Length: 326
Image (tube, rainbow, N blue to C red; front, side, top):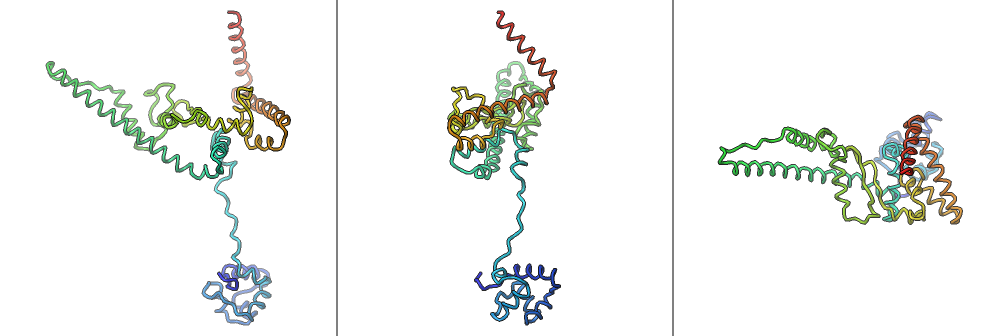
C-alpha cells in the first residue's frame, strides 16, 4: 500500500469512534468535509483509496486524527493464546518442563521448536507402534496356522487330530484386534487378566526399542507402570550436569533428581548460576535442595497421612535393626 493510500478499515474505525462522540454518520461526515456520501462509502468499502489533497485536512480534523492514522492498518486485537504455560503444566507430569528445557539446550533450539514438532513426532511414533503391533499379530496368526498344519501332518496316522486352540489366547488376540482397530496405542483395552502384573504396555515397549543403541546420557531410562502411559523418563543427563555444574559422583544425586522431577526449577537454577559466584551458587543449591525435600515430605504427608508414614518409617527402622543384629 502506498503511503498516501487510504486504509478503509482505519477510516471506518476512526469514524465509528468519532460517531460515539459527535454522532457522525457517513452522510454527516461527507457534509462536514465537503464531498458526497457515496465517496465516503467507497472509501470505507475499499473501492477507492485515493483522497484528494484538499479533502485530507478537513477529513482528519472532523475525525480528530492525524493523516498517518488513516493510512496505517489498525492494530489487530490481541488474540489470546489457546493455553498458557501454567495450563500446559497442569496437563503434563512435573518432569516434562525440565526435560523440555534440557532437550532444547542440548540441541541449541528454542523450547518452542521442540513443542512445535512434538505432535508430529508423537503421531509418527504412535502410528509406527500400531504398525509394529499389527505385524506381530499377523505373525502370531501365521505361526498358529503353521503349527496346526504341522501337527495335522504328524498325526495323520491317528486320523488327523485337530489342534485345540486356547480359549484365553483367542480372547487375548481378539482384544488386540479391537485395540488396534481403535488406535489404542497404550493398550488400555487389553484386560489385565491377559497381561503380567509388571507389563508396561505396548507403547512403552515400542518406544524403549526405538531408544536402544542411543547414548545412555541421551536417554537414560523410560518407565511406566501397569500398562499406563509413559509416566517418567530421564533424558539429556550429560546436558543437565553441564548446565548445572552438578556431578552425581560429588553427592549431587539428590539435587539432580529434584531438578529432573521439577522439585527444583531448572530455569531458576541456571539463572542463579549466572548471577552468583561458585560459593554462592553452591549455597543456593543446598538451600533449594532443603526446600525441595521439605515440600516433598509435605506432599507425602498429604497423600498418605501421618499414621501411614509413621508406620512405614517404623517398619524401615525395624528392618534396619534386624539387619544390624544379624
